[in-house]
Image (tube, rainbow, N blue to C red):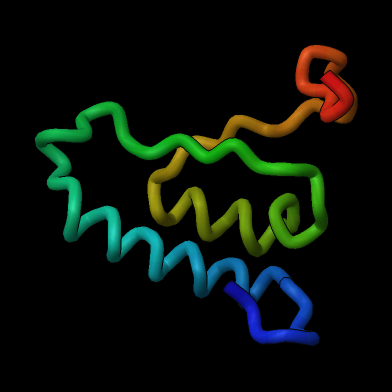
Length: 77
């Protein structure tokens, strides 16, 4: 999703969230998806920044935060 060598920051992530909202709204009308969209994110800075949290709040999205460590989600399983 990013050009080679570009770093993901909060502003770029918020732009991606806007594009994602437009795509979801076009493909899934609100009446079909009455529960809404729920995001499950990592603990990386662009996804936990105040700017990103504000954007998600403006979009009316729910966020399930990723726990710092969870043995049931360990990649070694």
